[in-house]
Length: 230
Ligand code: CA
Image 1 (cartoon, rainbow, N blue to C red):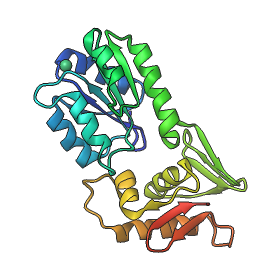
Image 2: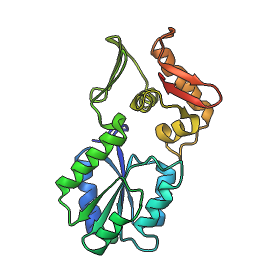
Image 3: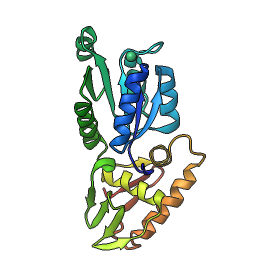
Image 4: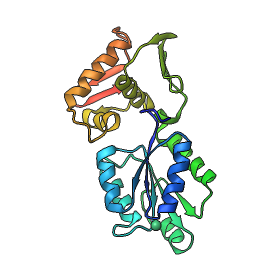
């Protein structure tokens, strides 16, 4: 069963058999899977659902994987989403190496599923540690992502699901300042019908749960957003 904190992977693939194989194996590994059959659909899904990683086939009808990749990497709202390109062996293989696609990794078809899953884990661990690490720590604050438990100085802290996801995002990169819009995208998803005021409310709750003292790790950056420490 998938939990709402399981990483969300968008698979962009026009061959139904490949799509099924990928979706089945990713779901078995505990990922939530979104699907798109062509490049235009992929861009729409990304806008609406902000996946944690994209597996992007190079050869797609209409809009090629290369164009989709460039478009996502040129948009500051989507550029941080990791992309693994799937390419056929042959010419494209050399072309993709030579071109500045902005992709974070690529896998050559025919690939072994085991290898592909290893690449997915490696890219997520490198670029999105907050969603794949089993335990994240910042000073005395510990998030156990397997048991869904948070402790401060060894004492358990009760958090609602939204506050938990907020904390996971913030602790992924201590010191990084997140704007309210970035937090909205990451924690609620773009399609959520909530405003930036909602972010303030949940950050307020998270801050309160972590203890009101001067050593509270949540920092407000006036006129911009929030960070954990820094
Ligand atoms: Ca294809």
